[in-house]
Length: 414
Image (cartoon, rainbow, N blue to C red; front, side, top):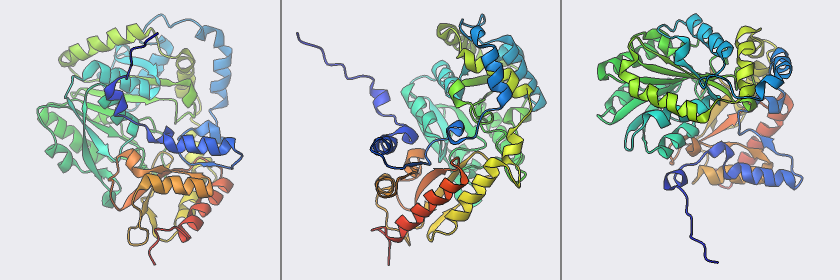
């Protein structure tokens, strides 16, 4: 019997997701062969003992039978959306009702839903560079074009708003801001966000704000929801329980639509309603956890606080060990749990950051992700992202292995 060849979607073939790409495949094969692998590649807190709040787990278990059916409302269960509405109001976000909140399969589900509802082929989305790669991939999968705006390393990886505004065209759909940022750990201050709002007002653009790491803050950094600065502007805010509440597998996310006049987004909102109803409902485990997460003790504050906070200590250990390695530098992360390492081209002759990370993995068992996977430039200086979720002992050992590898790296300049 002859079979027709099915090649699949060309738009998907052009996308990738580096944290779970070929490097991870190699690492898993090494682990299966008995190697000890240091997984510094993925922001998956409970895998490394950074556990969800106990009361959240107990509540999900208590309500497990209620998670079997679909939610009656395709936007999600009322109690969870009510808790999100209260959280938004506490953050200073106005012009939001419970009907403006959609529960989604994680923040990724929120982004997929929004891009599907919003984008037409050829529309441009202004994205920070470096950037979380899944967002770029999803934009491209729905026929959009990614236009990168610079985040200046010399200024703590904060967005260069002049560069952003220069790249606005008639095809621009919206800019996206991520704060705290993945992969840089930058937290955007109020005055910068206010200037971003003013740019969008001038050009009559909506905004998307990804605040999945909103409570993962260090050294007194303050998180500002950009929608709290612009009650008139159409803003789509994405959040969830994956990072702040250490429950990524529950896929509990949400999308909030704010703005004083949503008539200008009627077409997008109609599309969102259609798509959400087709999807039937978001993951019910995630939905059932949201109210307890937002309404209970905010244990994340204990984890990020000195002197004994679990994440505070792990960040300190990672920075301490990286500072010992000649030719490696980084900007101190103010949020999230990532460090973007830079390799000085005067010290290391790296021709491909992917091949560098692959060689490091094969020789040391340490898995970090190449910077080009986060849309860093594909020329020197090269970068790599390290996740500091492993316990302090394994962080020290893994980073020391990186240092020993670099001592003898065949691209090291004499």
